[in-house]
Length: 337
Picture 1 (cartoon, rainbow, N blue to C red):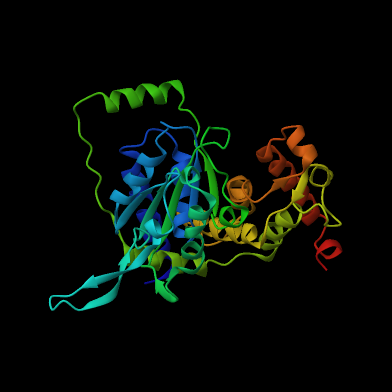
Picture 2 (cartoon, rainbow, N blue to C red):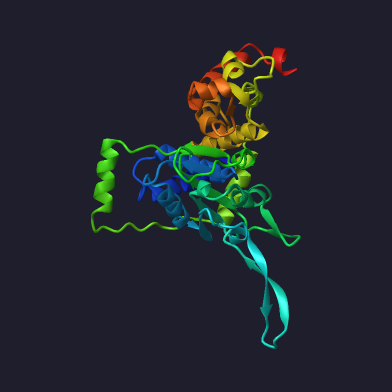
C-alpha cells in the first residue's frame, strides 16, 4: 500500500470512529478529537469535569465503536490495588490438591475506564502507574504483560470537590493529555434533552479492530517532523522551566516546576496524529499550538505566587507558546547550543 493510500485509510478510520461517538455525544467535538489523538499516539487520557457532563458516556461510546475488550473500574475510597491488578489465590483442583493461581484484575483489558480516579486513595491510584508506563504489571514478583493495545481513559472530579484525592505528579505525567469537559451551550443542551428523553435508540457500530489501532500507531510514528517544528516543541517545554536562562518572565514569576520530556513527546506524537487526521504527512506549527494546553496543563506546578494569584495555567501556557515561537524565530543557535 502506498503512503498516500495509508494516509487516506487513516483519515477514513479516524472520521468513522469520531462519527460513531458523535451519534451519542452532543458537542464536545474537540474533546472527542483529542481523545482519539491520545489513543492513536499510544498515550492515556485524563478527563476532568463536574459530574453529569458525559465523560463516562463518551468513553463507553468510544469502546462500543472499537472491537476491543473493555473494562471499567469505579474508584472509591475503599478500593485496593489488588482490586485493579489482580492477586494470587490458593485454589483447589478436582483431586483436592491446592495450588496458587493468578486471578487477573480488570486492568487486563484493551480499554480501561478509570472512573472518578481521584475518589480513591493515592496508594490505589498508584496501582495504575506500572501498567500505564510499562504495559505490564508485577504480581508476586512475576511481570504479566497487558493486552495490546492498552489504553487508559480516566475521569476525575475537580479537586475542589469533597472526597477527592489529588493525583500524584508521577501519575499525572503518564497521561498524554488532560482534557477539561465544559458545560454544554444552550443549543447543545436542547439537543441533549431531545436525544435523551425520546424513545429513539442509537446503535453504535464497531468500526475498528485492535490490530488496526496498532497499525495506525505504527503509521503515526513514521510521520516525519521538520527540524524547526521539533525545535519549537522542545523550546515550549524548556520555556516552562523557571531555571532555564531563556525562560520568559511569566515562567520565572509563577512556575515552580516545568513540564518533563514527556510533554515534548506528547506534543510531537499528538501533532503527528492531528496531521494524519487532516490528510497531511507532515507536522505543522499549528498542530503543536493546538495541543499545547492539553499536553502541558497537568505537567506544570505553580509556585506560591502563582497559587496565591490563582493564575490560569491554560492562559499561562498560551503566553509561553508565544515566547517560544519568538525564540525559534530569532534562530535556534543562541539558545539550543
